[in-house]
Amino acid sequence: MNVQVLRNGQPFEAAGNPLSQLIDRNTRASKQALASIAFVRSSGLDATPALRDPAEARKLSLYAGIDFGLTEAAALEDHIKLGAYVGIVRNEALGAPKTDGVYHPKVWLWKDGDQAEALVGSANISLRALEDQNTEVSVLLKGREDEDAFVCLQAYFDQLKRVSE
Image (cartoon, rainbow, N blue to C red; front, side, top):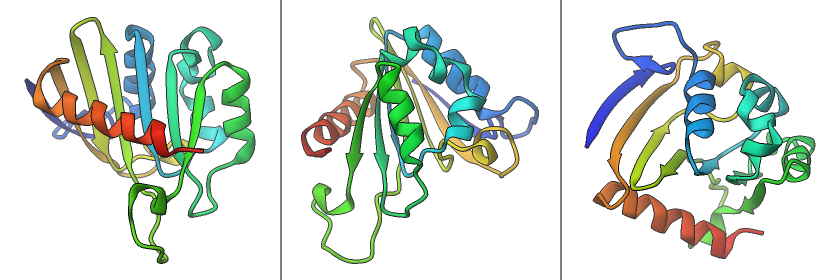
């Protein structure tokens, strides 16, 4: 398995290409895309053309949080109209105690045949996160779909499918 630490979509020691380009490229190159994101904004979808492309959106399952009140309903509605599966996930649905805690992940999983890539980091789907206005750090994993990390991430997404609204 190949592992890279990225800052704003580039190897940590480099700078330049925003995360939106990595997400766009991987979504277009994959047969299946899964995302678990704390909040989703229209600006982030706009910054990533594949997420606005109906042919690409149909292969995306997007699990979004609404706990912060920062996810835009219009962004989710637009994505549903494009053919994406959109699930709303609440923190308690994953077994967390009812507190002020929030659903706060930022995880992407792309699959194509027996190959997979995953991006785990700090970026939500927003313009500030995806176009280098914030400093975002992520780990990009590349390898075979049957490697432990990808099997565990798929199990996580399977759980999200069961508990999402």
